[in-house]
Amino acid sequence: MNLIIVKDYQELSQAAADLVAREIIAKPDTVLCLPTGETPIGMYRELIQKYQRGEIDFSEAVAFSLDEYCSLSPEHPQSYYYYMQHTFFRHINIKAENIYLLNGITQDIVAECENYDKQILENGGIDLQILGIGNNGHLGFNEPAISLNSKTHLVNLSDDTIHANSRFFKNIEEVPTKALTVGMGAIMKATKIMLLASGEKKTAAINKTINGLISTRSPSTFLQLHPDVTIIIDKDAASKL
Image (cartoon, rainbow, N blue to C red; front, side):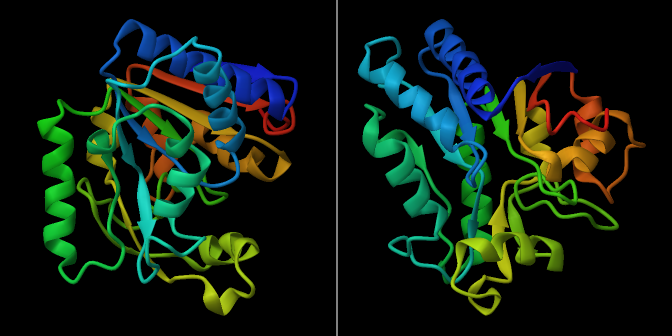
């Protein structure tokens, strides 16, 4: 693992965007798998600014979204389809046909998941997997469990995740209890992985990711097995290392 500790969230966002930019400049048709949530917002803003300054071209890049809530339509402001479009995709020159997003309101979940995995394979697999991390060590919505699913799949969200995500909704009852997520197999097969974490609330999860025993009860510990992982965290998130 390559551990980078920066001063604050702004430096984290800049460092993350710099890494993404280097990958796309070196390989314009880079296949990205992208996260949602609070942590990557700064990175997306930095990438948009790089694009606007002419420093980076997304016209050949391919992007997959890491996960999606079930039961939320794409137009719902808390859906990850909405998040990715409004936070990032609409502000850069990525082609619509190169964007792959999970459908959380599909009538055939099995077919949706199988087709998503097929699309990843048809694009040559993930070149750069970008991840946030849950307080309980989840990656995407791969929650702590007795076993982990390697493929894109339906997951029942843990109480911890529902509670953590309730800050984005009017009340906890509005938070979806199920989601679709890319599985650990595709994540671990990515050529490169970048994990981002900011704030003291992520200290325990980061410490376990780096120093803990590898366990399905903490999915992020499996990153210890990957040959090319970069972890970028701020000083607050590094306080228990």
